[in-house]
Structure formats: structure tokens, C-alpha cells
Length: 599
Image 1 (cartoon, one colour):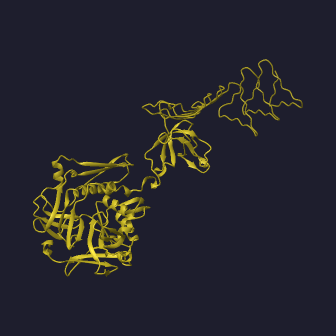
Image 2 (cartoon, one colour):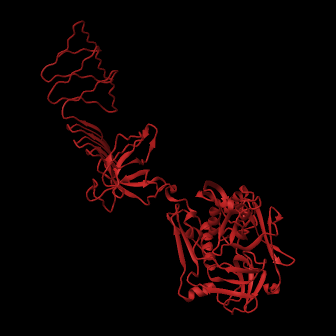
Image 3 (cartoon, helix red, strand yellow):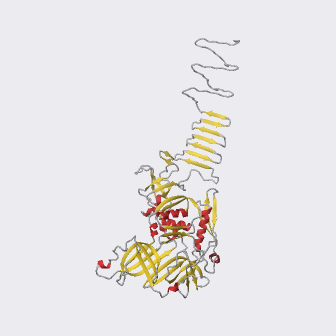
């Protein structure tokens, strides 16, 4: 049977405070001690010490200026009942302050945190490859020299990125994504599943040892199940992972799932366009359902001070009726010691919001917090495309949301291919509308992401449902047109010069504005000229054909001229003039044959 805090009622409270392992001076008047612990939060403690009343500055503030209470020093708080005490907090001093109260009493306030507090400072970025979350978290905790107890997660990530986040926030968000709870205890980090079974560490009963309580059943988040969806690049379709009902502690006589169904809640769905695979989707869905179930029975119970309650353990409730009786999971613990009285409050359940929702500071501030940020895309108009004063090939744009007139701002131009001395070169025209993004949401560093059409800046083509035509058309109507329907590529100028590659006609055609045309098709090659055709070669020209070569001029002469002209026929040779034929030479003329016939 679990112990009851009532067993210590009436006993003398003992509080021990140790600095560096040694007790503080017993003459110090400790006015109050407060310790707070919670799942997914950093343990803290506050000690209030009365300062001596004196007109002398050195006398009043001697304690606060001594070597004892120095930030960074290890501190341990123990509480119990004479003659015993147990540790309720162990950590380091992080803040020291002095103040006066309305009754003119001077106080020194010592604020403490678990040693893991160093994980909460300093934003970092890192990329982890082919590791499980548990492996990543273990490695991070090891960097701080802290002890750990980390539940092994089920799958590895090809890559996971930590961007400008503290290690503590990164750890918490990854734990939440796996349905795990994070808590620190005396310099040790725990990453654990919910404690659903086992023995209660303490029993509290209404009317016996409970000072006050506040218990609630919250049904508005008790969905029957969760399905998480993601985009699959391979199949070009959404894939899903479905949750399984988590094992929960046995408390009350109404299950969370039934309570949600009772008010008409249906299955919930979350979706992302990130390409998450099924194991991660299922883990995500399970984590969301675990978080919802932790928001079912909520509240707090305050009773006689006791050091036995621990985070993620069970406490047995009795005398609160069948709806709340049973083993409750402890999600938070508060110890308060003041005026010789020690009370302990245990908290049940977790808020419905995720940590990333309740603490915007989990992510780095937009624009690095250097100035007010700009969010989303902005539109602008091009003012100037040359003479960048910084020599960075930027374009000057006016951004109406910033300033419609004036000098405008200089923006870099995003290109689909840009490398040293090479790449694509498409600059917008002055007056064109462009879409702007901003590096790190910093309004000082815009990037032109693309140009925009509108009713005033119309495209060169009208969109059709078949979407067969793609094209590049310049300001002066130089054009490259892709006809996907007929598989035709056309390059043309406004004067009529044209180069056409056509799969439809099985041809390649070159035409110019003078009426000249070259065509390659299934019939062969044809060359048509509106005027003369001149073929010139620095070397020689060979004309060869498999079946025949014909040279004809319908309205002019055919002339052959060269140092030597040779005409040879393998079978027969014929030369004929319809009106006249002449064969002559400035030197010897030889006519030979087996038989020579003249006329």
C-alpha cells in the first residue's frame, strides 16, 4: 500500500541547504523555499533569505556579497521531518538579487536551475544523417557532460536538421514528435514514455491529507484517433500513418476516447507536404494522440510536504469519486516551504498546446532579430537593371508595400542556372512586375524569384487546357516555341527568318526573309533560292550520288572551268549540242577509240 503524506502531519520540518556540498550557515534566516518541476520544462528553485536590518551597508549586504552565494555554484535543497531530510532539488545558482518589502524587510533571493540549464542557451545549427532521434539526443546530452536515460526510438532519419535552435528546444520538439516526455532531475536528463503502469509512490485521500485540489476532465481534445498524411514523391500521392491507442494509467471510470466520442468528436487528420515515410507518420500520429490523452484529466492537488512524488510516476487518488479516483500520472511537482510549513502540489496532465505553439522563441526570430522582419512574398516593379553600386549584378526595384517611389531597393536575381562566367541570362524589363522573397526575412536583402503576368502585362500566348505550347519570346519578338502537341520546335525572328524541327512532318526546315529555303524530309534534301546559289570551298568539292547527278539550267548556261577537266564514263559517254557542238584545244587534240566514227 502506498505511503500517505498524512503520516508526517504535526512533525517538525527540516530544511537543509548545501552549497558546494557544505551546509550554509545556520544563522541565516531562510524565509521561504520554492521548488518547481514539470514534464518538458527545466527544474527551478527559489530561496528567500532575510537580510539583517542595519543602517550599515556592509552589514546588511554582507551575505549577498560573500563568497557563498555565487552564480554557478552547486546548490542542493533537502527537506523532510526531523531528523531526516531528502533531496528535493539539486542544481546551480543562476541569479542572485536583493530587494526590500513593503514592511521594510530586506531580502536576498537566490534563483537556481538544474545543471541542464546550459542546454537552454545559445542557438545552434547542425545536420545529422542516418541516425535515430534517440542517438542524436544522446550525443547532444553528452556534449554537456550530463547523465542521461534515453528511450530508444524506432527509426532512423536519412537526415535531420537543427536550425538556429537551442539544444533544449530541439530535444523537446524531437521528443514530442516521438510521443516521449523530457524531464531533468538533479543533473540527469530523462527521455521516457509515459508511465502507464506500476505502483503509486504516494496515496492522497480527500478529507485526510489534502489541503486543496482542482481536478477537471477536458473532453474537447479527445479525438478517437489521429491520421497523419504526407506527400510521396515516388507515387505522387499522399501516404498515411494511423495512430494506435496508447497505454494509459488507470484513473477514473470514463475513458478519454469515449469521452471525446460522447461530445461528437471524430477522427482527426494532420497533413504535411514534406516527404515523410510511413514509420515517421505513424510515430507522429501516435505522438499527437498521446499529447491529446495527456490533456484529459487535468488539475492539481496540494497536501502535506513530501519528497516522494517524482515526475512521470504515479500517485493514487482516493475519495474523489469514481470519475477521478485511481492512479494519476504526475506531470509537475511544486514544493513550498514557508513559516515552518511545507506543502507539496502535484500537477496532472499537460496543456493542449505543443511547446512550439506556446513558446514562439523555440524558432529563431525572423531577420535574426536585427530589425523588424518582412513576411511572405512581396511584389515590386523593376526600376533599373544595370549599374549596381555594389557590383553584385542586382536589380533596382520599387516595392509598393515599402515605398512606391524614391530610390527603391536593390535585389539579387534568382536564375535557374548561374555559375562563374556561364549560366542563363534573362533580365526583366524596366517596369515589369516581379515577386520578391527575402533572405532570412530580412527586408534589406530581397531576391527576385520570378516575373509576373497580369492583365496589364499580358503573356505572348493565351493558355489552353491542352497546354501544348511553351515558348520564350523576347521584347523584340525573337521567339523559341515548343509545340508539345505536334512535337515541333521553332526558332524565329520577327522578319520571318525561321528554323523548324518537326517530328510531325519528319522534317527540318530553314527559311529566311528573302524567300530562300532548305528542307530536309522523307523525300531528301531540297534547297530553293530566290536568287543565286554560290558554293565556295577553300579545298575541293565532291559531289557523289548512288543513282545519278543532274545539272540543268532552264534559262542560262552550264559552265565547268578548271585547270584540268576530266569526264569519264564507265560504260558510255555522250556529249551533244542541239544546235551546235564544238571540241577544240589550244594544243594537241587526241581522239582515240577501238573505232572512231565521224559523221
